[in-house]
Length: 341
Image (cartoon, rainbow, N blue to C red; front, side, top):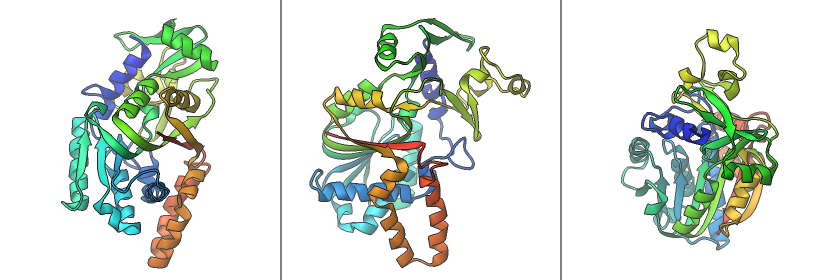
């Protein structure tokens, strides 16, 4: 099977990595901005409020999160809207797009525990269920979880039934994109075009704010890797191509991590922008996470916290926020990309 099919099975099969709820943060396999500080969601809430005040979106728009994990991010956004512009809680609608049924149930339970019956949340399993006039769409780390093909020179990666990878003939799709973006060694994401098309079809007018790691230009090497309990394993180090004997002796190989750990790769943002552009969706901004959160209003939120809480609370939250904007952690590695239709 093609590597993209193998990656889909790894992540999204009934027994795949994302089919079950996985802890994020210290007890999980990796950290995210959402798990680091509630001010990540707070900054996005301020961005939403600005978009409404500018008149691009209406006060009865739907705030839609795609791939919400447990629901922490949407809950943080709701909480900050309630703090900053409480009247909008009465007019805005809130929803999650989550194809995994078990995760939906976890999200429903968490949001019910957080807000009771005060706020109604809608849940969608696919874009086919969504028809919206106006929406603020947000996603954190979804594109790095899109399946990809892996190319090396004039071949692409396949995986046999014994989970042994091998290189063989390029598919036409992969060949065209590798040529278009000059990718001789690296990953080519599968699904950007379909995602953009479905988003455009389902929502008449929207602003889409997404955060992910990667670069605007394609890498000239392989970024494919596996995260397991905060350890990072380059994919090929787990295979016959460049197996690390030390890993093998510790019982760590591709088969031992398959469907039990996260597999990911860097986002190629130019490819992503082109996919949206071809669906007549405009890319309005691309910047580092650090720059985006500051522009959204992170500093103002911290000042507000300082004025209304004790020094201990403020310093505690400030230390968490530093993880979001620290260039050595999440600040530069992660990018924010914004689209409008």
